[in-house]
Image 1 (cartoon, rainbow, N blue to C red):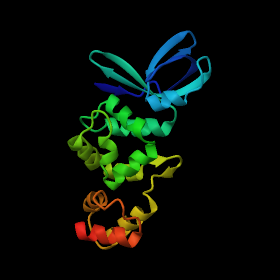
Image 2 (tube, one colour; image 1 turned 135 degrees about the vertical axis):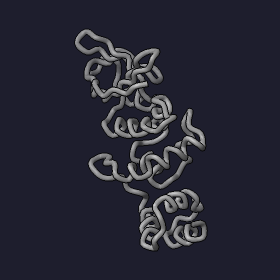
Image 3 (cartoon, helix red, strand yellow; image 1 turned 180 degrees about the vertical axis):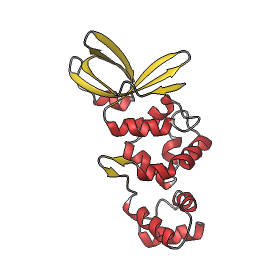
Length: 195
């Protein structure tokens, strides 16, 4: 499969919308665009003017246009499909489960749970996504600012980094901290036990 960035966005009249596919009429040409069910649900009524950001995937058996309501979702989608084994439908499933900033935050923190909830992504593939995209996820800008961790985990991250621990070890241990611990001191103590 090849990924081509030749159709960056499509603007026109919404011709139809189904669970995860929409039709868009643009100057007499109808485009069929695959989207997450969540995105389709946020579209206005049929007949409305819309702009959809797109990614064209070319396979041996055909071309498919994937659509997004914002550039951030497109950016995260393209990051996800850059990982070997993650196809467009699995990447779309990830974005159907969570906002782009939340996906990037989970990847940056090494938390696989959110990824594993998505269709087509098991433990092994989720771990590969974390491994390949962990550093990139921290540097991607969403909504005009770099992705940030939840405040407490960001402080835990910084404390462990200042103690000399490697980023991959910090990322791994952040995903293992007891979820019910909410205070910085408790989360840091738990992280130090598990690192």
